[in-house]
Length: 217
Image 1 (tube, rainbow, N blue to C red):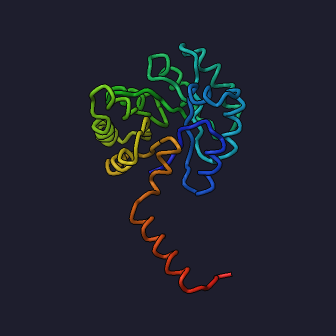
Image 2 (cartoon, rainbow, N blue to C red):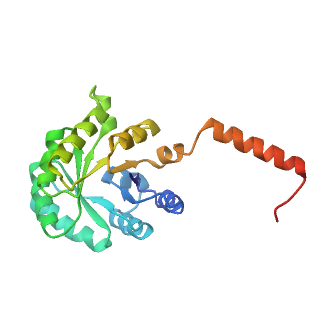
């Protein structure tokens, strides 16, 4: 499963990229607004920090406006993926962009039917929001399972990008279902490293080493 980080914090992106874990980055206007920086400046900087796809979201609501914004965003890096909403106009823009070889991430997906539409429009990625789905009483991971079944039935190339991940269990569940990509905040990715037995083992090794009075260098 590919790991994307969902943030506009360029320091966090650079630090996680140094681990070799990151396959891409997702952003949205809300995340960039929190940074207090200029939208285009942040996207361009992120595109230089990672080799994989960087999702940059349009803000226009009509297809023509989305396409004009996409033209500008695509100048910011060769790895820019245009993120559009799962609306009729969003899918119109998706179709035109994907026909021209542009990667498109269709976002705000909350049903398998919507995911089917995005795949037929040529989306490179579909972003179902599991956490938000859970918040309103639905089964977020059940949605991922349904989309996986539908896509496998027809051998769609659209990758399932699990979004709105809230905790490490979501990551594990997505991997067990066979989702292609997960995107999570930096804190969730860092939490994947944690286990009390790892900490206990390291503490024991350090204590035993200290008793030897030796040094490697």
